[in-house]
Image 1: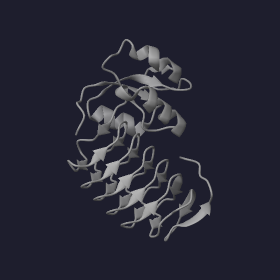
Image 2: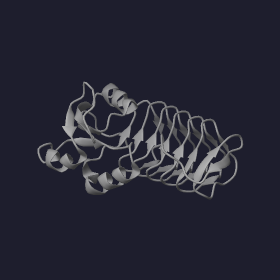
Image 3: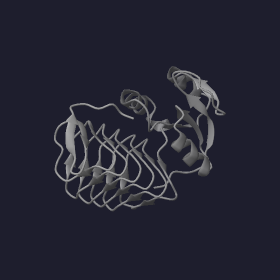
Image 4: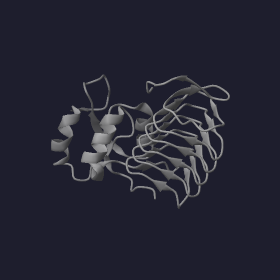
Length: 209
């Protein structure tokens, strides 16, 4: 399941967690695409629109795309799926029968249990535990140290805040954000922001970090 190393990688943006993970795993970062050039030791490769021409000359390149605006992620996975990097840290424990969608990024010290399913272009941050038979929808970000217990379901386009605990068999719908250290003990059926112990809805929308 772990992808072949030593690929050359181009980043979308400058997400520092991903940069560190990739360098530790001996990937070669060629540069980054973004809306504008930022101060960085990593080479600026141009705007997102430049990717198509760039990859014509880089047949083995992979594009790291598991952060940033959702619509951009969706467009990139649609147009450049064969080039999108799927990353699973060698320091993560991932079941052999887990299914990891294209473009997802599993960081160090995560636990991904038996029969779990993770969708496309998800970021599963450091020290997150996703237990058996759970499902994570596409384009969902899981912040550090989240615990999702068995047979739980998290929808697409969600952001699960750091330290959140999701009770077993709970269902979280699409387009939901949870606050730091929230406890999800009942189904969350409507989009919005939920915080607290137990988590309560405080907004009907959310702004992704």
